[in-house]
Image 1 (spheres, rainbow, N blue to C red):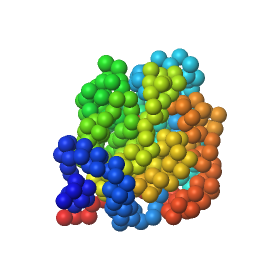
Image 2 (cartoon, rainbow, N blue to C red):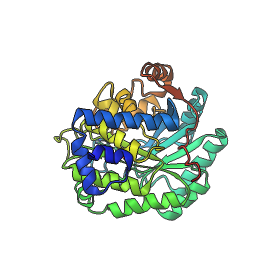
Image 3 (cartoon, protein in one colour):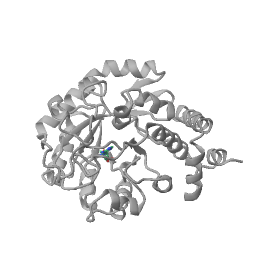
Image 4 (tube, rainbow, N blue to C red):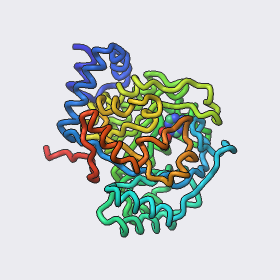
Length: 349
Ligand code: 5AD
């Protein structure tokens, strides 16, 4: 039996077998087989629903210096901004009126946003939008901080691990950052009862199948409720400006593989995928993705949350064009769902 069938029957492979799986999936027939199985599972657990989360990029100040990222602290040309609590609440209010029931507060690692300030913010959102889910995506913090934010009402936390290979992590990040700490944060978040999202970039400079195999092994261990997987896209003011972008096709294969590995996972068709290919998100759904994260940030700020070049920020991904988005999702054969969309639970046994 080939590695593709073996994986479909018993998805937790060893590192070397994942390398073989990735190689085998270069064959279009094998990729199609993985996509078909991914679709079967996604339909089984989520039907035809595509869940939407309103993304609010509330600060692009960042104390980190990740080599790939346009808002790294060394990028002196980035125009920095920080939304006030009032502005963030208006974004949520606008989103709530559009029907959004889950908000993702994403930002750089901005020390101005202390635990106190985030607690006030989370409590106000929960008060203004009862029943809504609040997702944080504000990077590495202490256990105590994660605990306080959880107690203030945060439900979910997105922290991509970026790569689960130690050597590759060091190529992408400055010496003061470590994969071990990032993994520790993810396990702490899980222990505190957050629904956790991990994830990685595809095609970051120097990444091979061996690194991607580490990502798959790690996701199998962590079992996050969500996995954000998108292609690397170069940014002109970073050390990786001349590096090639990651491949859409490989990203799609990985979406299918992760859907099979973690059948109930929430898998966004990412903005980076939509940036690299005008039909990227539709292709993502066909590969097993089931989440979209339209932008609820104030229109004037979107261009400034400049993680990579040509990042989509005025088209269908904008939350105001929800009607357009709905049409596109339906044209692709899916149904836009405004429900909270928690990860499907494992039922007994
Ligand atoms: N290309 C693609 N994705 C990027 N991110 C940051 N910089 C880039 C880039 N150049 C992703 C990281 C981060 C998320 C918010 O954006 O994976 O976790």
